[in-house]
Image (cartoon, rainbow, N blue to C red; front, top):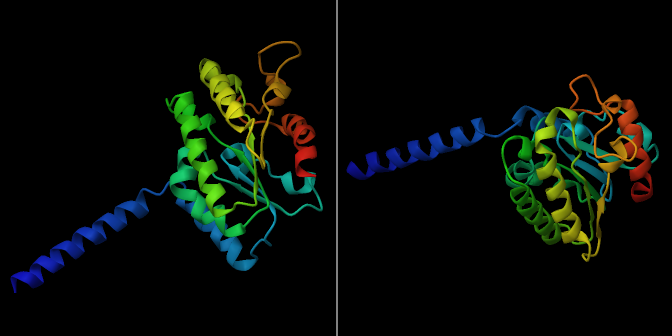
Length: 220
């Protein structure tokens, strides 16, 4: 009898942990929506995956800008880079077996108080994970942008970009793409606020025009 109650006790603990894990999954509603889309029409393998935070999620005409290319857009709310590593990769990265992976993440990590070194370490983890799971994929890191509303973080942003740029410099099947300097005012280190929405955080259509020009050679 004691063994029976002991077993029930451990089962209850396990169930509690599972419920807590499910409740703690960040932006789980968006992941469920992506999986629902996949169940209706799963993207073909060898596509071009854009993954990351709201700068990807809100780029709603990305597929039209690169018409004819097998674009898979999987931006997740205000997600942080460590969440891509710890949560999202098994759901909205690895299953697609993309041939190219464009990553925009890290800005929210820094805004949440994390350091540039933390962002760099998380990128290393993700880079190595992709290398093991998808060794033939080419990995592109899109530079973290300096958003006007987050000016106090510019130094950390610049350092994170430099660390990741140097890390990728001699690694095959990878590239650091500078989408940060193209949204600065001419000959300055100040972002051009006219390229942002009213929140001075997310790019507007003119801002995405700048990104498209930089990305085209890599996508094509």
